[in-house]
Length: 130
Image (cartoon, rainbow, N blue to C red; front, side):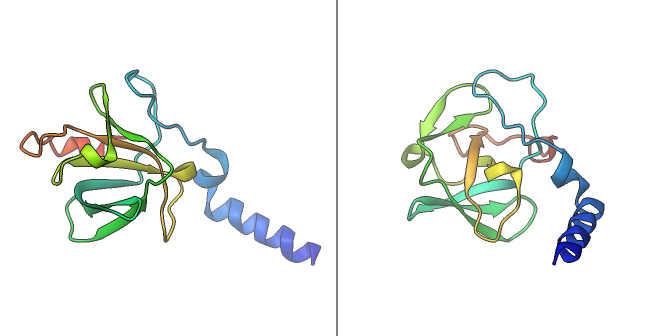
């Protein structure tokens, strides 16, 4: 049994070094300038329902449900915050999952929106920023 555990640990270290050695660094509201981990999901807010948000993938058609029931608000990329119920459909968002790790049923640690006005859209680089 110990052999199997050691073997799996070595495989994990070889295959997933970024997951093993990197820290998850979330944005700090209203602070900016600090190095943060890349967002896990970027796109456009499509729906709010059942303690979560539905986000349409930037550059694709996939719509992902993301649990936000434990969060009180989302933060603007340029300062300020909004309760989730006040966010408008069609706005650009970036989402960091718990521990910055992908998951089949993701839960957000941090949600950022570009602007709460759907007509105010960011350049494509906003979605790709690392």
